[in-house]
Length: 231
Image (tube, rainbow, N blue to C red; front, side, top):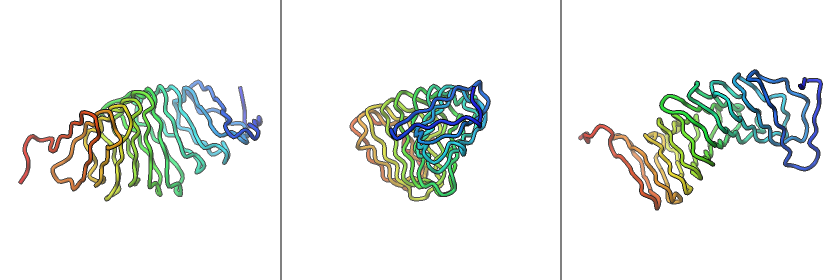
């Protein structure tokens, strides 16, 4: 067990990892210094990392049911999700109001339509979503990020696509895996998958003003999902 009276110092190594094993409830956090990565196992409750300190740059949720909100400090630029079932409820990932980027790493994440991963941050401008192994969810909502990159090392399936409130955004897709992004948000006016050797599967609405470049795989782009092109 640990408490807020405990302390841990990773020293000067620069790549120190602290593993926290929970019973599902939000854990007590010791005083931390020189810890760069924190892995939290089996968390099923809302949790804020404010007590982690400014040295932590990556927080990873491992296992669990997904129906929670994780709030991270401004020093955290990457959140990882591993062996996580988003189907139990939407997963909220919140950063500070001044953070301009937040990256997301996915490994063995499961979910489908309506099982969303929602990024929140008033100043978010960019996000890189990396599927290191096959992963699936409903939508990934990137708030107002206008520069979004998808790296499909493993296959990525998003039943409800990537949502943004941007109006002239750029979506870049690369990797050797397949990327099924479903309906492309009209907020992306440029979609470039020239670095993707796997297959891109996506849909473009009838009113979208978008320039799309495919990759070298067997891409499937549906230009209108109603089987009837409007005049």
